[in-house]
Image 1 (cartoon, helix red, strand yellow):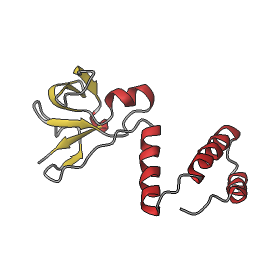
Image 2 (spheres, rainbow, N blue to C red):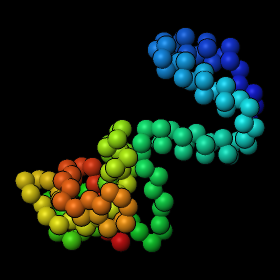
Image 3 (cartoon, rainbow, N blue to C red):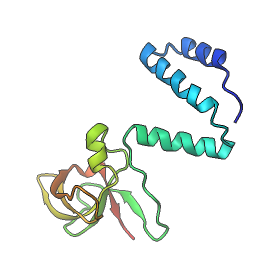
Amino acid sequence: MPEVDFDWVRAQMDQAKVKVGAGKMVLKLLETWDGAGLSAAASKEAVELFSKLALTHALIEDNPDEVWVPAQPGFLKVADEVRVKQDAYDGSLGVIHNGRRGKITAIRYGDVVIRSTDGKEPFLDGTHYTPYLLEKRIR
């Protein structure tokens, strides 16, 4: 990983009119980053992981034996296996809900009601979601 050119970074942020708070945080992160000595591949992975986790998006390991598709109203039924999209919610709600798996126990007035099956805490039972925030397992 090449050294960070802080003059270039500041010029880029000035040109893009980055807000002061965000700019200060970026500079702070880049100061830490500058001394890390990561390879290009490790740098890319670290940035991807950091950006997801900082936004409370779940890290979902892809299982080649499973196929997930966006859930659509009208094509869901009780007992279907679903999961909350990895980036469905932000903040504390994201920590609780993003990436969670469960079975549909009911569909009421357009809401999909699930019971978690992933063994994570907190256990979710009777939690309502809009289908647009879910993915359905088809295999």
